[in-house]
Amino acid sequence: MVIDLHTHTNFSDGTDTPTELINKALAAGITTIGLTDHDSIGGWQEATNALRGGISLVPGAEISCQTTDGISVHILGLLFDSNNSQLMNTLEKTRENRHGRMEKIIARINEAGIDISMADVLEQLSDGATLGRPHLADALVKKGVVASRNEAFSQMLHNNSKYYVSHYSPSPEDAIKLIKAAGGVSVIAHPMASHRGRIISLATFGSLITAGLDGIEVDHRDHSPDEKAQLITLAKESNLVMTGASDYHGNGKLNQLGEYITEPSQWEKLEERATARRVISF
Ligand code: AMP
Ligand code: ZN
Ligand code: FE
Ligand code: FE
Image (cartoon, rainbow, N blue to C red):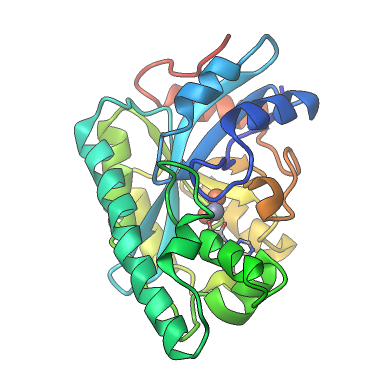
């Protein structure tokens, strides 16, 4: 088994369609792929339709969360029931709020004398997709303001930038509880990706574990060997599942499918914690 539990498509800020994602994952030798678009399950149906023998789909979403002290946390929800209205309503509220938030970021950029409009940004977004800063980055690239998504983030769009505005997001504890109530499992994504902004404290970790966190994404390109070692210790102490994943975004990031993967024994442990068998096979 080759298991990659965290990927994005053009239903959020990835650049591949779900069909392309499944085809590329098969070609890369992946047998079990998690589809975790930001705050959306919009790609599940197309990904399901694209399945063939040799690859199974772990339906999921990466839920944007914020702690009470304003730290951004990403919680991967996997194997939850998509008919759970509380969880679906929370995702929808976040998706809607991202539009007003984008207007605010654009206003700040305009004040700095850079000409970019909401229409320019929406042109970069597929129908119904979750709007995010990467779409603004793409619009800035098209305008010739920056050369790449990466340059847009490092110069203008990072979390500590004067242009940064947050959007509505549930607390990570609430997201974990919502996922659990919907029968799924939760994994904290890239918890030590410190170059993106502030990261959570050990105390917050404790509070997430109390809320019912199932796993920690240990193997991820944004973690150093030392950070991975700390996370392994924490996971073992608290009996949490350890995952690894690519966080693939198509051309939107350097991350390659399968560059980090989850051990089959860890995946088995995680899947067992869901209330039903929700992996989708052809
Ligand atoms: P948002 O959801 O609007 O807050 O934007 C965050 C998203 O931007 C994350 O999902 C990242 O995948 C993406 N992102 C962050 N930094 C970079 C970067 N340097 N290059 C490309 N994408 C990035
Ligand atoms: Zn993303
Ligand atoms: Fe993330
Ligand atoms: Fe991600």
